[in-house]
Image 1 (cartoon, rainbow, N blue to C red):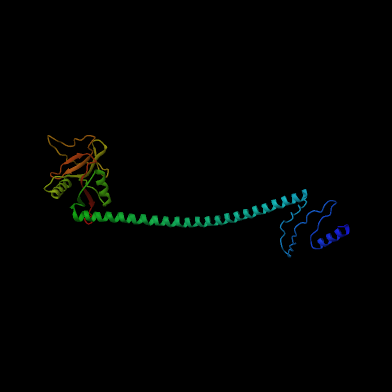
Image 2 (cartoon, rainbow, N blue to C red; image 1 turned 90 degrees about the horizontal axis):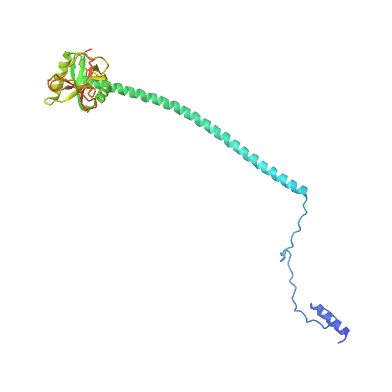
Length: 270
């Protein structure tokens, strides 16, 4: 084939979409035809081009850092403002709470005063009831009333019980009172024989006997017997009890428990 014919054939192939490169040597084999896919507007290409890096300068970096610091300072200022508002609110609430506590403390003080007043009235009522009971159930002797309590107490407990009832432990001051009390105690425990605490002791000084009210004892009714004369306890036995069978006095250990006798003022006789 001549050169003209070859050129014409190549033009025909290129018009059909198949182009054969021309060379000085033999012709290369024709490539397979691949139809071109037309992309519609808006389609994303398979490979996006990388954005070009914007040029930076030292001035722009400084401005960015400065703006960042300013934004952080603004955030800190806002946080501090919120803390101040919270602190003020808390201070107001604490002030209100302290005011309420102060008012409550005043009310508690008033309540405590009322409780003490009621307690004092209760003590006074118990004393008056005890005195009335002593004179109603006990023995009247002169201007005083005496009542034996058939319950066991040590000396200190018996003294406390008598005071709570508005009286004091029985303190026979002369022979007349002693004989009247001996008869009363004997009849109370008949036919038994039980010791009964009297308000007499030498706790302050050995051998110096005092009544429970602190006055000195001038009359004694010690048991006299050749086998067991009283008092015989020395420093160990410092509290005095009356024997119910004959009314004689015995010294005993103060922590021993026994019955006791209280005396009360007879206001009716007064």
